[in-house]
Image (cartoon, rainbow, N blue to C red; front, side):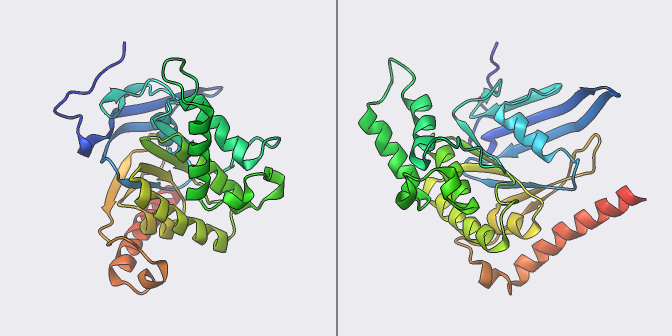
Length: 278
């Protein structure tokens, strides 16, 4: 039976809620406890980055919020309702763009739109409405010129933009990003980070991103959640990023507040690395 969050807790400051979450996996060598006692509240419209060393459970947290896996202990909520599985209100952008190679950019986005807004017989939209949603999503990421191209005909950065367009076309309440720019070259990554900031400003969507990139985390986020080392990883520190928006990366490079925040994340990661090595 679906659990409903206490109305006193189900507000904009607790739009996504993780309560006492543990995650243990069964392996050939026995049980492996990946996460221990995770408690996190994410505000509506907030951009959260999760950072930490490899093996600290960053992607596991993202998969739990996506509903792709269920916690061993604890509860997760989105907009006051228990996360019991995947749902269109939570869209995922993977590091690998995961586009269907035989479909065009337009068709890849349209497929997601059709599944969300055209599947229900009593609430289905017309093909004209579905097309309008698809066109709007591609325009939002600046790909109207590439609608008829297939994935093998476009660059890696453009593929990622199609993946973002596909996710945004579903009009999710929460956008989940699993190292979406990690496989791209530095210039393409910087351009897409700038595009993502513009998109988030337009949509007001809540976002949770897993990243290894300290500069990316500070540039994009309202808060940075720093994970302790695994196994039994937890939340070590949460850093408030009180930098005004819109943010310009070149200006921030010389900003003392930005550099202080950056050094705080690096300090945490260095301390955790030293502890792991000891």
